[in-house]
Length: 418
Image (cartoon, rainbow, N blue to C red; front, side):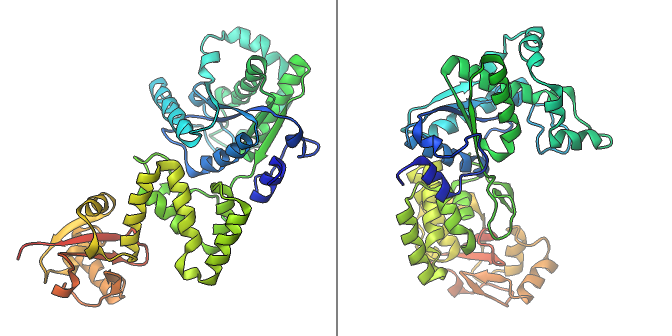
């Protein structure tokens, strides 16, 4: 693409902005900031979408300041929340701040950026000084006009605390501080931060007379279902390998629906328009091969977890999906599989019912028998309707047993000595 505005447009990163024309992004090199509150020890794939948008800003020559909200994280953004957030300890916020900064360094490795922490400029700011300097310049009507504030105020037995009500002042001051100290004149964020970002623009105008801008990208949703992106059956999909393993992360992308995969290739990879068009053309000739999903999983897992973790995750997935027979697995591969799924021992003629229960794939013998009756139990990818294993099920003394269609509902069964 020849310009940043063109790049952002075709990828789907255009929501709201203060620019009269989005081409203004192409006529000036901005110093901009993007922030993440350390409400947890890791970002999610929802954050990753916005991080990818940031990478395009960087690639087109704009200078990034990546903010970790060590101060705002002590309060928590109330926008979009139906009730008061639970306050984290200062120690937890500090630890999470370090974890988010580490993920910044991983995601933006090779780029020129600066990490800033708003706790650094808030820790010594006296309360009365903040009220005089900042509070006096933020109209209460502006704060009360926010839709989520009105909703919370009308909610019986909930409401909103003064701390959360004041969150917008803290974020607005972030923009002012970075503008004064670093020349930052653009805030980039997800669309859910529009109100907080505009408050910063207004504060800067009131106190300095300067014009600053906001650019937001849309929150990512499944284009077929309209459901907010970033959840799996087990909850949030995290960027931290301790919270979502690289294999589970890889399989999350492999499971992308055909109707969403092109959209996600645009959002979550740096592949060019021509490359994505070629991938989709090949994918559409035989969708059962899931070529687009595999490329998506390769690209995103490599970015977040690195090449070696991607290779390992890919191999685990190939065993689980049956693309590579479990009998060919090396001991290293088996060690990785045991970290991902249940691993049990069984005699060569052992009970499938007992194996289902001991592996956790069934809650009881009765439930196990019902699964077998419904032909919902698979041995090495083939449905079975019998109660016991057979010698030929085991290849190199191992087999893969699965419950239902979800590949992660599997167990590695290794042959015990008879």
